[in-house]
Image (cartoon, rainbow, N blue to C red):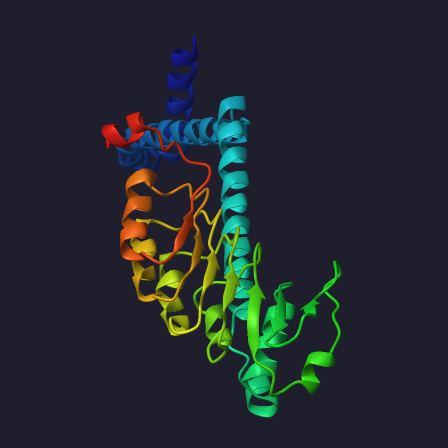
Length: 271
């Protein structure tokens, strides 16, 4: 029916316009397939766009959302942990920095005393029975400033954050007794620096220090005047029985205290 109607319309137009209509029809005929192809192509593109836009608008699955949330959370946590570690390292370096200004204006003895009190440690001057120490809030008496000529003889820095660098603030004092018990920042490098006290040091307590190994203990051979040495509860100390024998041979005049180890014959034989 539609084909017949189209034929009738074409004949009517031919009667009205003659050869001009025939020319237009002949020229337009080759364009019909192209127009149909363009329409189909446009419909195909539109369909793909709608399909793509609908897929983007579809919310991700619960599994993907969970993975994304965990990734973002753990990345933030990692940044916070790194930032916290950097701040802690900077605070530790600042705490153990050399008190150069105090040393220049008040002398070595006052600078050492000030460093110890800031570390929440305690000390005693040679020839005195009084111990200087800070209270629980970190406050202390400033009377030590008036004792520039007094030398430190006993120092207790147990359970503080002193490290190898901080020991430099004690150099120049004829220490007889030094306690570093439970210091988590004391390692083998810190023990190697104790040789500066080899002429005066008689008692040393390095018990409960988690980073000390046999390599650091070997550095104590320079402390020939040592009378008492406490190496109890060193978790990184392998074969403690053999290490104690080594220390006794290395420091024959020193009484070595070593508690918290299995020193049975079975342990010695197994190693």
